[in-house]
Length: 253
Image (cartoon, rainbow, N blue to C red; front, side):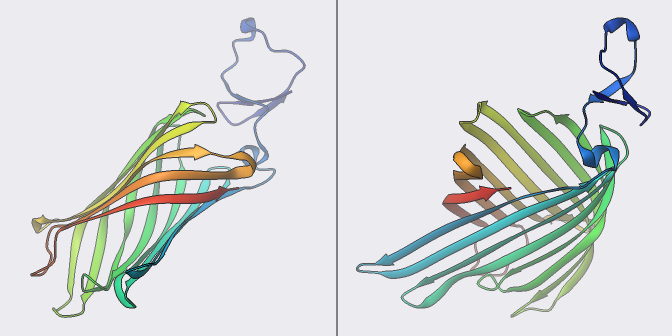
């Protein structure tokens, strides 16, 4: 077997006993951990609803997330698209794309930078651009439970349909957690990301995803999810909270 020590050295052995007292980090590590290969994984999910009764409506939600890793380097790319129509009139038209780079400093700490794009045309947001560095903490990372959080500072630029644009500095945060309630049967997850204007604490922007996922064979899964969005500084006649209830069908690779 191959043994990865905490100082990064690789040893090969046919046996390991407690008396060796070696600072072992991992036994038989994957190829991307030792630099001999790469890890690429991802998930894509679709929620689709078509009504052709007394009311004609179409609803389509698509989201995806991908991750690439090699040694201490990690790149994440995620995105989401929501487009709904009722009686051929657009009632929901929004999307976002998030790109991140992480450098893993230790099993607990990592740091990186991100770029975030978002639009919500029904709410009058033509484009929100946010970019900046952050520090991340990986509190728990086991096959059953994952918990991490990030704190950073972002430069934000907003462009609206009916009002002048806005540029400001913001504090940013994110939270990612998941826990397997029943092995290979049921998983609870919660993802959150937010921004707060350093000059106006009422200008909080919050996006959360909370749901239950049921794995199916062959990498497929289904999930029930609540997405909640909050915008503190919104225009007149626009509600600050936007809630979406989804039943999604996804594929993991």
